[in-house]
Image 1: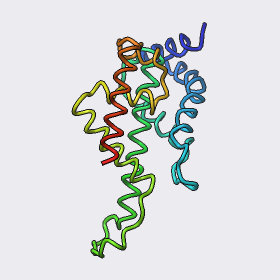
Image 2: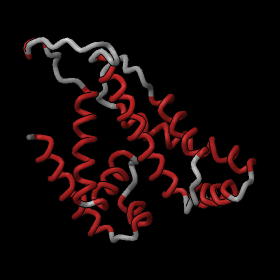
Image 3: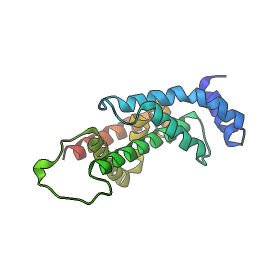
Length: 185
């Protein structure tokens, strides 16, 4: 049995209520999830308070608790990518809130006291742009999530979405161009 079909079979068994399938599934998907998380953390500042392993663990716990009718391994990784993106954004929002005093009373200083641009702000800007893209074209948002947050290949994306790889390539080019334009403003 190939790795892909084994994961798909375990997902179906797990969904059907077999706890042993869930125990067998974890080590099979963990390495891939960690690879995706490590890719998401490339370019992050040293000493980031959230590490790839913690991100994978938290995402996996959310996925285990989700009531999802798993289609196959690609569906699992697509949802895992979306979950990791949400967790990273939530982490950045929490850090941004704490950096600005959280629940402390606000005291306004002049703009010269503002701290420089950092990765959390970039992630929040990207998340806002992705939200706008989702309102304009939800499929393009899904494609960006699958490709850049999930690391899926075009063939895997075609399997998840039911769209041809040539259409996916075109839509990804359009989505990247739209995001580049939106983030440069």
